[in-house]
Length: 523
Image (cartoon, rainbow, N blue to C red; front, side, top):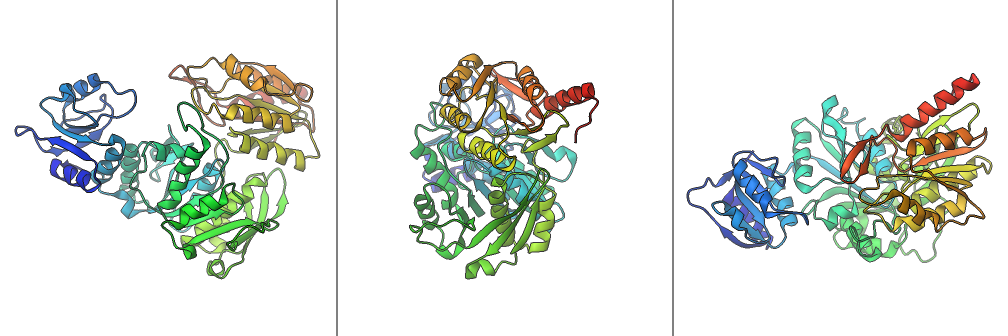
């Protein structure tokens, strides 16, 4: 693949991004590679000078290693002798030029995008599982857990961001197309719009699941309004929109969808009991709970409106995951499958076998209660998780292991305190990707908001010991919730991904040891 300097200039001019350009007569005007990492350079690379931490020395390194053109928001002496494209916004420029370099792979994929404060990953996995039924497993995935760009084992790999940088995203999309994938389901974070990672991308389907305050802090969004605005951009850039009618800020969400999408291409869903006299738009789909136990969740989808009845998806569905909150995620995914051309039987078969790494992974022990590992990492997801456990298991003692990440999500910490006050009996506050912050200070910040007359708190920064102690103290009938890291195999500590066994691995090891001591087996 390659892109010419003239093509770059035309694209940047078309989008009113080009401020100036400098063309060197003696330098090749075709770029054979693209990068924003000075350590990843090949001969004739188009190099993007991006990021708050960019240093001119990076451009010098890129030039030395073979870059022949750079894109930046200001000219750099270090780029002397290179072609220079000076732009108004380098992140937008990178998205547009990367899409062109990788030959617009989005045009060869049916692209589905999902956003929401909680439920993105689960919904994305549900939808992939269903679409795989009609395209022989040719559904690519971009998620906060794994990325899938092909059908071989090597084509599935851990993600580093919920939504990759634009250059990486379009490269992965091109790989997916070259591997024969026909559909793509992707999570789109608020930061993806804040950082222009999906600038210029349009989706065939766009999902808005829910919204509550999150990702607000000095390194993320300055306030809730900015967070919501970024989330809403997904709907503005979708051809068809699927919206949870029960979301907070519904009127703003619906209004954003209508800016580019006709009402007959906007689909609303809600549970069967939801009523809102102020809702001015008819709900198209309803869902109802049929049965929930520790192994499965059964629910029914009803097609209510005339346009909903055009989709042959009404009927019963079964999830291989517990949690009534997953019925909403499942319903959203089923609607998406219907809009993508699926009927009930194939959709029901596809969704019934889906498991999500690190999501609601459950171990039922003989003498230490039920142990659940989940990525729950904000107030909304913690409330949903603990509320479900309280309702479904006859008001059990709830023991929670949880921490909060450093350097980001600072606004989540009071939410942890609120949710623990509402449902927890015993809490182990521990380490969770502290970054450059002191994990003890993070734990103490959460602890300061906990009502100690209701909740017994232990600060144990050794996460392995915290999990061990939580499971060890649990009795039959208790529930142990290990929240935040799921299957993550590392802790982010002072800029280093430090190896960590993963919560599910640690939990299983602890359970094995305890049950062996008692002469029991767990299931």
